Amino acid sequence: MKQPVKTNLAGRVLIGPKKVPGGYARIVAQKDGSGCIESFDVASRTWNLAAQSVTFSDVWGAPLVAPELWARIGDKP
Image (cartoon, rainbow, N blue to C red):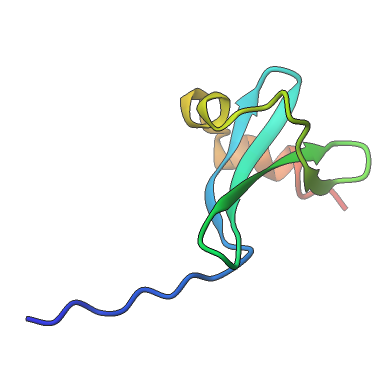
């Protein structure tokens, strides 16, 4: 049986949001198939490229943010 071809969707959230020291982070797919770490700015409610001090290990090992909690943090108008 032939496996379906997976397409990389740049901008797709691969992991997160997760609670890391100092805030929230996620890993997002890039065009080249790699991932980048973004951090969430609570004041502006925007995702930005994370500081280099946040590592993939930090994000992978961090606890997920519950959807109910994220709705109160990230989706405020």
